[in-house]
Image (tube, rainbow, N blue to C red; front, top):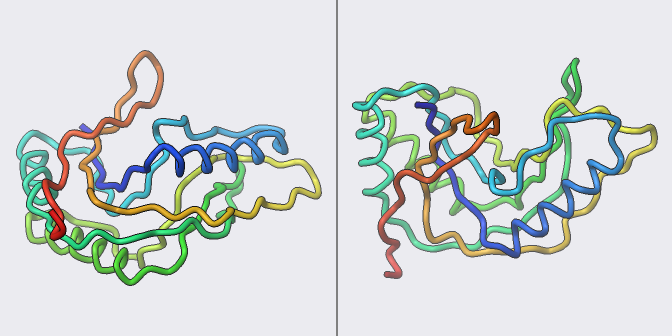
Length: 177
C-alpha cells in the first residue's frame, strides 16, 4: 500500500482551498485537479509499503505528542513542469510546523524509512499538469488560520478508478489533551 503522513484540514479551510482551486480551474485549459477530500498537507511521503512498514509507520504516528498550534494559508504559486505546472497553496512560516515535520521525519527514519533528503517545503497541491490561459494571476489566499491538533498516516489507493486518501492511523493526543 502507498502511504504518507499528513495534516488534514477542518471544513472551513478545505472550503477556502476549494475556492482557490476552482479559480485556477476556471482559468485553465487543462489540468488534473485535486479532489476535495484529498486536499492535505504532506509531512512525509513513504511510498509503497508492506504490512511491517505499515505497522512501524502507524506506531510512529500514534506515538506523536505535540503542542497544538495554528497554521495560516499563505500565497499560491506553482512548480513549473514541462507537461503542465503544479499549482499549490503555501502556508505562512511556522516554527511549530517545522518542528513537527522534523519530529515526524526523525521517528520515521528511526523506524527504518528512507525519506526525501530535500528541504521541507510545505504546500497544498491544488492541481497537477495545469495549462493556464494567458494572463492568469494567482489568487490571494484570504487570511485563513486553523488549529493543528492531529497528524494522520494516510493510505493512497485507486477505488473505482478514483484516487482516494484514507486515514489509517492518527496521533492519539496532544500535550493540551
